[in-house]
Amino acid sequence: MMAKMHDISLKIGPAAFRIASTWQRPLDQLTDLYKAYPAPTGETVDFTVRLEPEKPWRRFIRPSVHIGGDFWLPDAAPLPLDQGLLAAEMGMNLQMALGWRRHLLLHASSVEKDGKALVMTGLSGSGKSTLSAMLAERGWRFMGDEFALLSLDSGEIMPFPRLISLKNRAIDAMQDIASENRFGPEMKATPKGDIRHLVPPPDAIERMNEPATPALLLFPRFGHAPELRPMGQAEIFVRLTQASTNYVALGEAGFRALTRFVDDVPVKAMDYQSIDQAEELIDALWSPLP
Amino acid sequence: MMQDARTLIRALREPASVEALNSRQWTDLISVARAESLIGSLAHRVKDVAVPDRVRAVLRDAIEAHDLARRQAMWEADCARRALAGYPGKIVLMKGTAYVAANLDAGIGRSIGDLDIMVARDDLPVVEAALLDAGWEWVKPDPYDDRYYRDYMHELPPLIHRERDRMVDVHHTILPLTARPTPDAQAILEDAVALDDGLYVMAPADMLLHSIAHLFADGDLAGGLRNLWDINQLVRHFSGGDAEFWMKLRKRAEKHGLVDELERALRLAVRLYATPVGKGSAGWRKISDCLYVRRLLARDGYGRETRKITRFAFYVRSHWLRMPPVMLARHLWAKWRKGGKPVGEPGIR
Image 1 (spheres, rainbow over the protein chains, first blue to last red):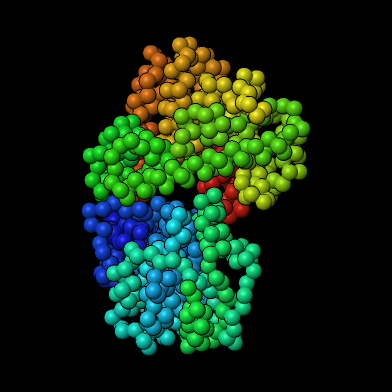
Image 2: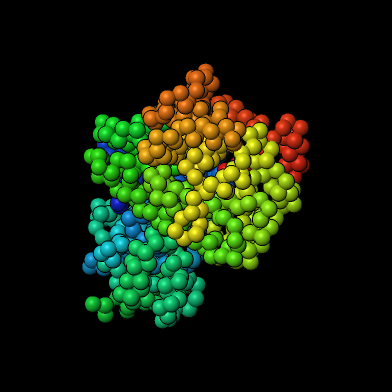
């Protein structure tokens, strides 16, 4: 007999998910953190995520969660049940990364002001997620900290404002400015370090179907003296193909969307050591924009 | 929640049946179709049926994904053709790539992974050298696996292209050499049909029998619903325009030693996909057919593999079929000593 599964549905920006789990707890955590999001009741979903015991007995004994679903990776490492919430988020990211075809996915954070989007991309540790979370508390609309969805025909960025995934030092920094009831449980020593999820500000959720025109692309780098540097178009293009999870899968449509993005959007590499420095540099670039 | 894959079968057989599905059932159906690699075929089948908006978007994604897979498969076949331009023998495309190259219905929406080609066994060293020369490399440089492939399998160890990251399986026949039926590889090559670009595909009966051999004489029925859908599509296509098809098919199955497998495949295709088959061609019903159906439908609405015991029985059977017991014991022993799990032997995917 197969173990019974529980499930919930979630809608984040244009994508809808069914999260099915052998355990109720991760679903309760998700339901609580996503309570402000519109429920896709009576609607089908795009993807199913499955959280299952790695082996049948691992449902009860040292429970460990295997991340599966419609799209999956071989050799995905299981997580302890205490990190079930992280497993669910990773499962949703995996579905998007491997299965979403309605936009070009850029591994980037994005925020919006005056209908224009600021997109930030870079290697993990560059601070792009923290920057988007911080700017969202300083007058910008949060659009997403993981994926920027670039439209294949209009060239706009569509929000994907899932829970903000704070790591290590960013947790303390955000705890100082955001109220406690917006935080999920703190998960220590996960494969990605310490993790705590933060519910995006209300306007990010209310306006999650509102796209914005990309106006500036930054490659931030945390921990270096503040500086802005120009970048060559070829380098930008190649780095964005690497930052995209579905560039190859989209074929010609992906190529057209990306070349247009690189042609139209001004780009800078940005070094910074604090959020205040970053904000100053961004403001200087942002105000002269058309 | 759906208990098995029956709804998927019905949707493929009678596309209009999906109009009655509620959103929950649609979500289940999509998970099952993705898990069985039939989402592309389903998407094409229900193209003209009314479906909810989000489902339409999911199905359109599937169609576009498979369009690209088609183009990539054709490109990969052409890369192999150019790499082997100096080889005078026939290069026969197999499985999904062949269906697409020959423009058959079986290729519509079908997922295609590796490139599968067949050449004469005596020519393997020449073909292998030419591919290595053109940028393909060994995937598993493990001496035991390498030896195993060369001594007992129907194909070379898989090669992967170092720049395009795509695999090619070079076959010299259609079943492992250790399997009980011994198909006539030379006859397959002799009767292969030329395409415009100089590559070949198998003649209709051989193409169908290869698909059948693959499903019933070589594996544990993983991906069986997709495989049986191929069989259904091939039968419908080939039997439509040729009154003598059933007679030729029978003769060919006798030549290859695949009569039982052919009959079984036709019975299951009739049962699941209502495939029209020639009178008497499917043989007598067997009680074990029910077990096959049970195994083929073992998938729940979350996309999970169910019926673990039935699955395991077919897994054991697949090894039983492909090698004699003593050899199987030796093989598992060698695998175990290397610390590898006894799953994923060469040839099982």
